[in-house]
Length: 144
Image (cartoon, rainbow, N blue to C red; front, side):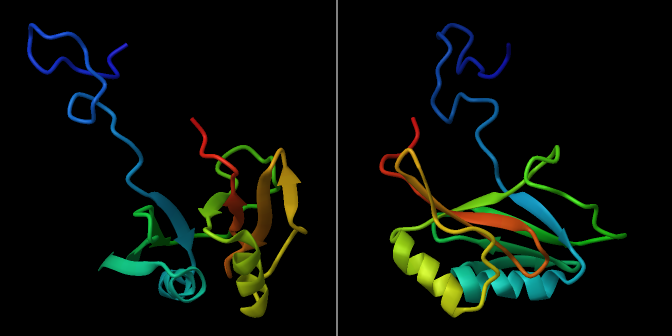
């Protein structure tokens, strides 16, 4: 499989970012009937910044560099449940789970679950104004 490339014809395969063919996810897109309003919600509610706009599209960037592109939607949304095939949620990293959960409640965000503890991982599911599912995530240790 060609997931990496050789830096020179004579060197062995390497796994540094310079040698990797696929280096990561640059952004995830969300289609919204109101892209500007949704982008502003991510700014005001989660502390993201709008870092780029073009033609009605808005890129919002989290403090850790993760980005969402919010694009104009077309048509009606399809019904989706937690396990419907496709993308299901965005996990939002937090430095203080309890403070973040209280902040969301104070801001009137729609909370859809009580806080969960799954093997030491703390989660709280909520939605953005368009109904997209997100959850807070606090792990005792990062995944490998």
